[in-house]
Image 1 (cartoon, rainbow, N blue to C red):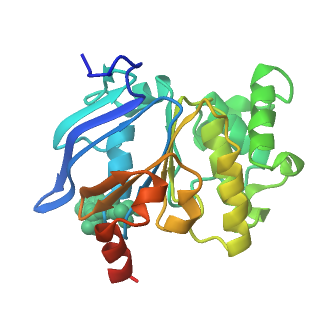
Image 2: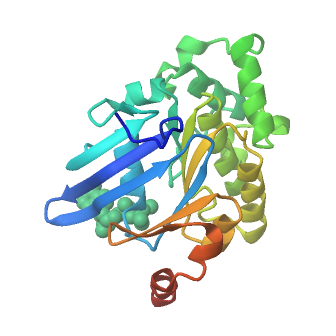
Length: 254
Ligand SMILES: Nc1ncnc2c1ncn2[C@@H]1O[C@H](COP(=O)(O)OP(=O)(O)O)[C@@H](O)[C@H]1O
Ligand SMILES: [Mg+2]
């Protein structure tokens, strides 16, 4: 059994996770524990191993060694779709939407767990019913309710990132992994995205990768800093600002 200190098991627990690509160790002996309803940031410079860590948690890549637990259950060898079935969702650093489909259709496909090749199975797209209501709610959560019928390709870059957030939210995840949701956005779009993340349901357990410390520090309860695949700090947003190692890493990489 997982050690819980009398509390509920952690929502997400990594125990000595390592991922090697040949000779390159991208993630090195990473342990961390994210409690239910916690908001956690994973920061660190490019190449630190942040995205690889998400691939391991989501099951898109197998770990080289270590254990992963979701709500106390060992999911280390569980295929990715079964992890989704247990309430785990993620977004991607790179845009992953279908440009010719409308905003509503994109989210409906995600709600039904269909690939775009199966889009015709969905025809006509249901505009009523419980699934459509979930799609509408997700669009409200990401501030895109007014753009439901707009083809995704006509959205601004910031709106496309909002749409991606909706794709993950519509599955009503218990644990949500966000990989640099504000990457490539203008300052105004970044602030908007931060506000959307802040307003996500408080019951959601959130892990957010972000390169920019300032954006994320007032969104989360705790921060893990990765460097060369290793955890070099795991503390509160207040104390991590003063962590010498973290300061040096961030100054060092500009
Ligand atoms: N599929 C892969 N094959 C080989 N090396 C990889 C692969 N994916 C990531 N890497 C390497 O692992 C390291 C960590 O990458 P990544 O997890 O993308 O870092 P971050 O998201 O923190 O920028 C980098 O050196 C990267 O080049
Ligand atoms: Mg990355």
